[in-house]
Length: 278
Image 1 (cartoon, rainbow, N blue to C red):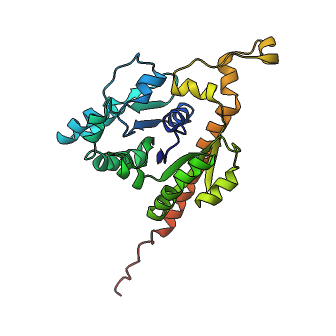
Image 2 (cartoon, rainbow, N blue to C red):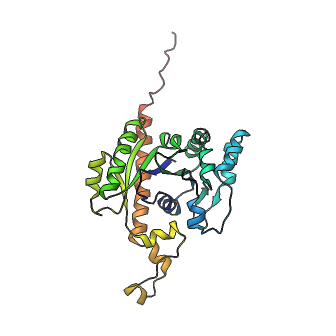
Image 3 (cartoon, one colour):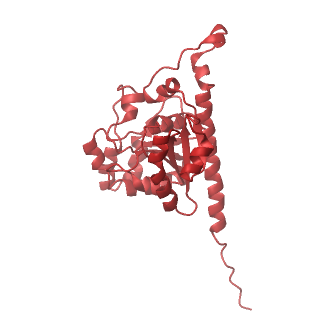
């Protein structure tokens, strides 16, 4: 199990929609925590299109004060229908977001414990550098994922943060790039070299299909030969290059965590045998 945090340096690469897309197809139980410090829940307004109202991270502040943060966390999680995922909804305003600074450190400990024993945790940390940014959820993640478009302004904005995150990573903790729209115009290898980080995956550039997660849009209609063959839009969406890229990214992240866990296990020295007195 793992704690994986997604964030960006700017350019709106779609951290929230990608985090939800990953959770949507995650093959085992996972919890998605919306910790974006911008102060408006993109999940409630976007994916659920304002049709849901649910408690979230603000109520976890009260739970922490009462000493019941771990118990309240899963009780407040909202299931995502048809998946093995559930969601902790983020703050609703910038005033709420500013008041969450003291929550992130204890929440990071609870999430690490949850990830170690029960289920994977994905964190949407939003944009780096904002007031109230959940840095403990980034610092304590098994894998920190820096998302980025592949155009020059996006790469330039990500450069200093890539260096900062890479230098601050603790032993056994990984920092990786996740690109959106590789080849628009620069390739994954070019961006990885420019930022000095390994690329864990590349999400296909497909705004219409990404809108399923960002705006609660229906899957795009089937066109061409598939329409003549009577293909179902949901099946076509699941088999799209966009969804394949999301699943491939999830597989790469889980493989990376497994390798990191094996490496950390090697660092733990075996207990020294105490010689018996003869």
